[in-house]
Length: 399
Image 1 (cartoon, rainbow, N blue to C red):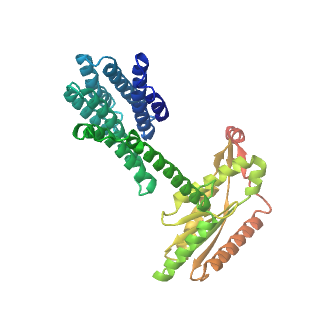
Image 2: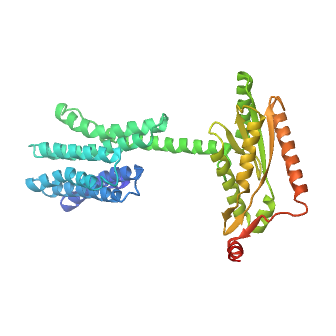
Image 3: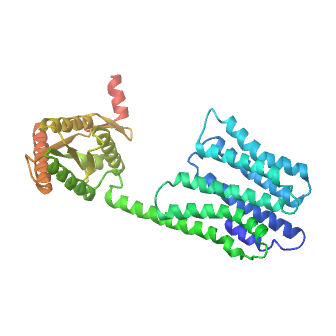
C-alpha cells in the first residue's frame, strides 16, 4: 500500500479527473496501509466483530476522503462523514461488548471519537480546513499504528524501539507539517524529509525480523524440535547450574534417567509418525508431573532426563520416578491404537552417589540399565502386549 501511495502521488498534479483520482488513491492507499497494519497487529482477529471493525474503518476513511476531494463545499455531507468516524466504531464496540472487550479495541474507539470531534470543529475553517482534516485523519491512523505496535511488542530491543519511534514520528509529521506552513511559511522543507519516518519504520521492522530470527535460532539450538524440551546441550548447562546451587546451599539434587521400553518395536510396527506422537505424549506427561523449578529434557532418541532440585531424600526422588513410570504404563490412544509405553528409570543423588555431573549421569545410566535388565528377565516368559487396535479392544469388551 505504501508503494502504491508513492506511485499515485507522482500524478497528483495532473490536470482534471486524473489528478483527482490520483489524490484519492494517494490518500486511500496511505490510510489503508495503516488500518490494515493495525488489523494485522491485533491478537483477536478471529473474533467475529474484528473484520466488521476493519470494514467500518476502511469505509469511513474512504467515504470521508471521497466527499472531501470531490465536494469540498458540501458541508452537511462532510459533517455526516465526520460524525461516522465516531458513531460506527463506538456502535460496533457496544454491540459486541458482551462477547468481547479488549483495551486495543477501546483505544481505537476513543481515538476515532476524538477525530470526529476535531473534524466537526475545524474541517470548515476557511483557508486550511481541508488540509487540517486530511492531516487529522492521517495522524489518527498512524498514532493508532504506534499504539498497536507498542502493545504487541512490549520488549526492550532496538527493532521495537525504532519501529515505535518511527510510527510516532510518522504521526507527528501530520502535525508538524501544517504547523511549519502556518508559523514559518517562508521555510521550505523538502518532501523527502517528511518521508523519513516511513524509512525509519521499515528499518525498525527489518531489525525486528532479524531479532526474531536470532531468538528462534537460539531456541532451536537449545531445544528438541519434536518435543520442545531442552536438548542435551541445555540439559548439561542446567545440570552444572543445579550442582553449583546444591554445593552453595548444601542441599541435595537428584537426576532421573528414563528410557522408554520397546520404543523401537512401536516405531517398526506402527510407523515413525506414531513414534513421534509417543515422544510428544511422554514429554507433555513429564512436564505436567514435575515442578516448574525442575528440568525435563530429551537427551536421546527415546531417553529423557529429569533434574530434581532440593529433594528432601532419596525416597522422594524414587517416588517421583515411580509416579512417572506409572503414568507411562497407562494405555494411550494413538492412531486408533491403544499403546502401552512403559519405561525404566535410573536415579542418582548428589552428593551421595556422585560429586560431579559426569559421574552423576553415569550412575543414573547404570541404574536405569539395571532396571531395564530386571524388567526383561521378569517378562521373558510372558511378554506383555504393547499395543492393540481400537477395534480389537471393542471386540474384546463385547465378548
